[in-house]
Amino acid sequence: MQYLLSVIHDQPGIADPDEQAAIDVFNDRLQAEEHWVFAGGLCAPDDATVIDNRGSEAVITDGPFVESKEYLAGFWVIEAPDLDVAFTLAAAGSKACNRKVEVRPFRDE
Amino acid sequence: MRIFDVREAITRAHHEEWARVIAALTRRFGDLDIAEEAVAEAFATAVERWPADGVPPNPGAWLNTTANRKAIDRLRRENKRDDKQQQARLAYDDSPPEPPGAIDDDRLRLIFTCCHPALAMEARLALTLRMVGGLTMPEIARAFLVAEGTMGQRITRAKAKIKAARIPYRVPSAEDLPARVSGVLAVLFLVFNEGYLATGADTDPVRHELTAEAIRLTRLIRALLPDDGEVAGLLALMLLIEARRPARVSAGGELVPLAEQNRGAWDATLIGEGHRLVRERLAAAAAGVAPGRYQILAAINAVHTSARDIRDTDWSQVVALYDQLVRVDPSPMVALNRAIAVAELDGPDVALAVVNRLENTLAGYHAFHTTRAELLRRIGQSQEARAAYDRAIDLAGNTAETAYLTRRRDQLG
Image 1 (tube, rainbow over the protein chains, first blue to last red):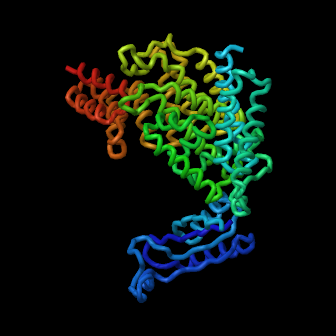
Image 2: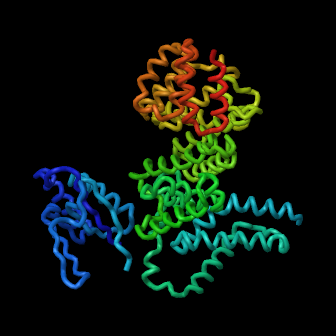
Image 3: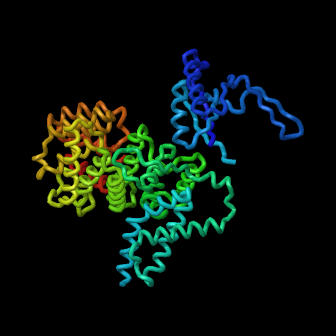
């Protein structure tokens, strides 16, 4: 079973060196314990572009699809047998990156 | 067999076997929906067949077999459950439960799943009453004063999340256990409190069916986790509060405060059982096990229920216990209740100064204004007392309490 752990950014600035070091330790743990699937940090929403090609031609808009004080700053995709294990990992991840983390299951398909 | 005896046998089987059969089927089929539907059908079959065929010698086994057959029938009927759906089965772990003294019983797994912290509190309440308590959807909807459809959606949504997010069917790890047990106890205490001080304008002020259900489920958890001090504490607390129920509402429908209750009407059997549990926990505390909040609250209620007359109450003991409680739970509500005891020990003016300092956090709670009103009355500040009663009446949701407060206000000169 896979879960998406989204890092919710609600403070100015990106991860500082201490946070980055703690994230590295947490990533090593995910790999050692075979929970690791994929992870990444994202640029600020200002650097986002929205493309809508549902009509006759692609419409390109500068900026994120939704303006909000809180935004997705990064994520982990983890493998875990159940939600309790995912919670334990999310709690460690939240501590490491010093931000809120949303746990969301992937659809079982 | 007479129809009355059969009906009684079905009621008893419902009380004793519902959770057990649901829990066993949930483990076998890995799905709360299938378990719930099959067990409900098995009970419906019992209602149909037992009056004619007689009550089976082992009703639990009969219900289990019948429910199993219903579940298998349903799966055959659907027959389209492919591998994907098989994977959606609840994550079940059959390793023995970790808490020392825990009974290996599927009902424990069921309770922890229904009270999982990933579910909203209202969903936990509803799911626990349905799956563990066996209450029907209309009964649960009535308990929380919401429409039946709303309650149905709440339960359906909770079950869907359990499946999609894979909330496990398991007793939590030793590390998580204290927090998770305290989550289960919070659910049961909420059910109890809604029964003891019902909030609806159109409901009875005391709803015995809810207090009784909360006590029944807490007894079940006590049987499953016999070594947990907080479980014993909550059971004792509920019993000692429930014991006073017969004296708590007057014939005229008014709430009767502790000081004015007819103590002869208290239930001596419940008090005896509650006191035994409190003594058991005091012995554990003496041996160095720090008591949690329910144990301390139970001890406070034991002091009250030990006094034959309000004047015999050992208030210094009550305040000492509240001091202990503040260290465990430094919330403003605890501080407010402590102040009520302080009034008896050090006088209403000392208590009022403490209460006034809580205004910032408690101004929205009727108990704050009730306490202030009573203290202001005692020091002769009628005008301020009247304003405080007004505010308390506005905020109180319980009909018997509103009636009592209105009379107290109108008695002011």
